[in-house]
Length: 619
Ligand code: ATP
Ligand code: MG
Image (tube, rainbow, N blue to C red; front, top):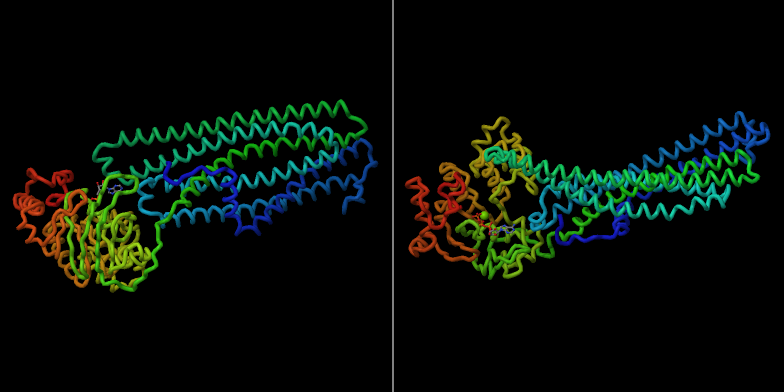
């Protein structure tokens, strides 16, 4: 999926950048390289043993291993087999060193890349997650990284091992008969052109495969997360068709890639073996004064050439897949992290929030979600935000902890622009309960004491749970505070999840509290209890409550009514009722609903009809 900042890097640049990650493993890498040099050097040795064997056959007793250590003085009958075993032993050592140490290098590299990707996820701005779907982000960590493994292990292994084999064999062949060997060298440019054109195809196709893999992950994870909706709205056929189409697209793309390589390999074989036949022909024709042993060794060595050449050229597919994977990985790593240029750090703030002429549009959209907002919250005050769905309440709340960067206007905490704080320090002062509660698949206690709060004493956790009115239900859970809550808290009810989120915010004990619709999933009874708890925690704290049930905010110091990104009314509950404007209308609607239990014609809260569970709320 394209996103801003993605740029096509040249293959070489990507490869060198990938190799840059090898720097910490240089020792292991050199060891493995030595192993492959040993391995490759054994190939021409094997060919040359044949020379001695054949020469021994044709002229018994005539040849000896002149100048060869250890076996040089031995009789040929003992010397040839012994030498063969020694060569293969030598090759085995090379093979072990090469393979094992390269595996250590490449697995280390994969590990580092995965960590780098994950680390970048932790610091990318919210807008990045808005623009990239999670399926693609996940498949980048799981699938694309394994593609890079291919380029890092298999490819490097083959390039080094087979490349050196070709070099050694070629050296041996040139030494034996350079004129004949030049005939073989002549096909190298032809092979180069073939490999080049296939590589370009591989690269293109493999990018498509990765993107298709992302789509597949995306659809699967959406269906898994939304399985209740899928079933209750009869979405099975739709999802099945969508998934089948995506999987088919994936299969076709993989097939296209396989076809490219399936055509490429025999074509290459044909080219190399045609050359080989020409060489054979020339050998037979121009035999000259060479011994039978020389000729057999020459042909054997020449016959060893096509295999490494084929492997070398096939590796281009692996490399191109890896490069395509690395390209998408690097494009994520190159994304700008959340800007964190502030330097101010405070141990504790009083909690005065001042917003001046704040306007905001989401990145890439022209629509003004917030339009010239100004207000001040004194330390310890409670401010309530109400207004229609989509009027910008959550957006305003998310700008205070700098989840998005705002261009116009200022937000000051204790007189310091939020941009001047370090991100971590700013967020330490703010406890946030968002509209969608996020719980982790961990125990109740660990969910309350999450992040910076981890390791908080159990008594503190229990106090926070008590204040959030969660104690009662937690103690009824099979293992109390040690009960696992399931993925995103699926084992709990909506209201219970919210109370844990509130307990988390209470435990954080921050001077600024932001509750976004924190009480909407609660029944009136629990809501009343939470209300009391909140009244307690709100003391000495600055609180911004985004409320949908107006009953929860009647005591607010100031109620601000938002509409289409503007604050259209502000005042206390009584003042706003007296004003008889937006707020009074909203209030009348809810009052009627609560009285009659009906959802009759609502002037403003038409969207409240969308969800049966939101009875009596504004959204
Ligand atoms: P509700 O009461 O339903 O929670 P809200 O007042 O909190 O509504 P916001 O979530 O602030 O509304 O949304 C305000 C506007 O911004 C909406 O029109 C919405 O479409 C848009 N919006 C919200 N989040 C994003 C986003 N991440 N990217 C782009 N636009 C967004
Ligand atoms: Mg909202």
